[in-house]
Image 1 (cartoon, rainbow over the protein chains, first blue to last red):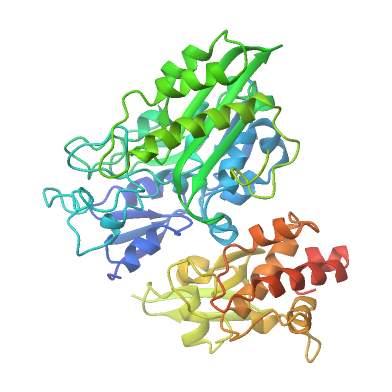
Image 2 (image 1 turned 180 degrees about the vertical axis):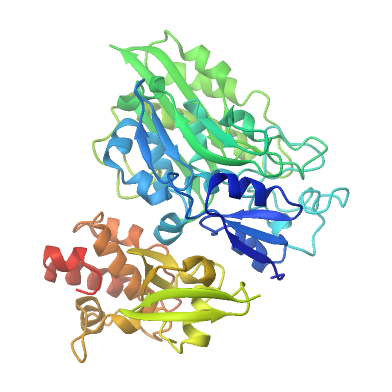
Length: 345
Length: 166
């Protein structure tokens, strides 16, 4: 780990002013940043500790039925907030399917959004990586691609975004509230993440000094609470990143779908919203036929980035499974292994 | 530049001066305060051997900067027992032979104490296993660990479960 200056920000204005300096990084839960610093992959000149900024650790219900989640709310605190889990059950399920209890207790919601890819070639300093060193090349191409992208990738980068939490957030139109040197702005979470293109080192639309202060879920998202699930395939029963994951939400009238939401994790460098599939589900009767058609549409543009064509079929099948689970009612209590396909419900 | 850090560790207040901001909470405990019960396993947040209770929540102390913990309360394995009277989780680990080499045990026990405080797992062994998934045991003592956690929880009254040092 390199030596750095450490400063604790007392106010948001402080944080923004310190954070815009060259080489500065914001420190919140630290679970990803310190790991990257220990690996010498990130070498900030200054750490701006934002953990004690006032007012950013609240979960506030909004008048429209939505919720505003302060940037510093811990992942576990959000998942176990009874009001939140009842209103946005797929988000709670995704949170509890990620990392370990210790990490969820430390990691913040904005930190979850801002975490870096876990591509093993990004993490291995001996491998070429265009994210770490623009122009160096991408050793993931032709390497092990089980956890790499099948949508939205480029020849320069085939990594995936590792978050579970962000998948239902994108499905349900979450918005990031951002503060920075030029003031406050809002960005739909889906647009916060950038696809790799030929600049994979640029990962989000945030500019130096900008930081997320809150994540907002709109009231419309709460209308899916009765039929909202997150399902995740991973290589271990627990405590593993997604090979593929799906967030699905339905609004249902009788046996008919009024509105659907569908997003995928583990398939691209951002949570992948499947809007065409959502449109195809509208006004269809609940059931496997409609779900399979929607799943096929969602993966229509997918292509393997290596020996990972299995992920395309896996994602299709998992989308059907997630929609089937959502079609049943959201369970009153999450199963023992949240989001797991090992559960029967 | 030096940094002053005030911490309450196992109910003892400590004022510490750090000459390096890179010191983790784990290294502060082990290398500067000689509290070596907390173990350094992977040092990357993956194994759980360094688990402590920080401000009422179980966390990996290897991924916390000591300087960022200023003003916090820390409970380590050394703070669990009352004299010769073991904490119920410690007693249950012995009773159920929930260890072999013992290296992961302090982290397992602190994680179990945190799990019981959180009160989410109930009496379901599957929920207990999932809630202990952040602690790896190379010897594979998991079956005994699950039994020990369930028994300790059953023996603790509600206030002991919610409180830190029972």
